[in-house]
Image 1: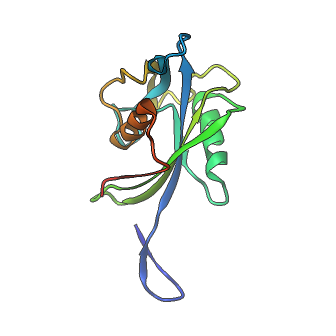
Image 2: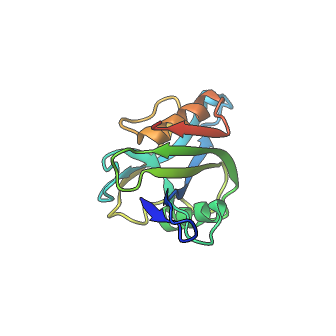
Image 3: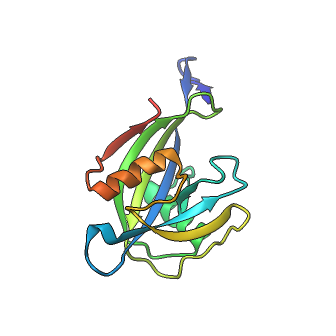
Length: 164
């Protein structure tokens, strides 16, 4: 999507910001291979339906911080609050050929929260399940799979890119 800059008259692209929350838990043995992530199965959203994705994610609204958006989305989508958010990475990505093709995504993890995660929007979410980071389901939303791989290996950089 592009807009015309009223000051210069030049056309500029619009960057769409979004926040993602990966809830993580340990299976009990302390081994990094024992880390599980909560994923949702997308449906009826018009984007990557039939793919597994972060349990909570969505656009950052005007005047909202990325962290506030993450907390709001977690409440709206899986009914959890009081997330102990840890910043994981920012991803600059593009999806050539789509109407909106420049994005900045803020990924957070949370290892503690209040409430039992549940599906709040069944029209958009077909399933909600815990998976080992070492054994993710197929298919996972591609740009999210990049982040999950970095979380699994422990070498996720602070800035990532996808689609360039």
